[in-house]
Amino acid sequence: MDEIQTGELKLTILEPKKKVGLIVVITGHGKGKTTSALGIALRAAGHNMKVCIIHFMKGDMYAGEIDGLKRLYPNVELHLMGKGFCGIYGNPYPFEEHRANAQDALRLAMEKMLSGNYDIIILDEINNALKLRLLDLEQILDLLDKKPPLLHLVLTGRDAHPDVIKRAHTVTEMREIKHAYRQGIEPQKGIDY
Image (tube, rainbow, N blue to C red; front, side, top):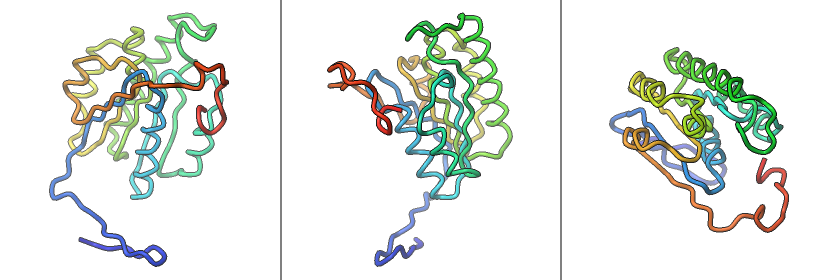
């Protein structure tokens, strides 16, 4: 094992005996799915790994991670492919436009995944896109089947499909216990967006 000196601390650097590209699913109805995935990106950037994040639904509203992730470039890149959440929050775009954007995001995901240029690809809100029928289950299973052996693939969003969960190595379900929004508190900068 190697060590690294940071200030007064000497830290051990772990290296797995066998490298495996994991499929990680972060799902559930609680807050923190995207935030957790962004934590993975931050951690990976610290290891000088290359990360590609593709937002399947988000893209119509500003969030702090847009500019925050620019600070991690060139290790981390972000692609905003969506036009907001289909059918909710007064989103004005028709279903067909949302589906076309999700299909474009999936094509980009496949291209980036097969390029060999990334260690981790984060598909943010892909589970929602499937649940809303913007993507088809067969398309996502095909993506999982074609994943290179050492690439880590992170899929976020509510309502992960059981077949996706079955293929994953790690699955975390976020469960809401309490949320400020339900108390009439508006989303807060840096915490919620």
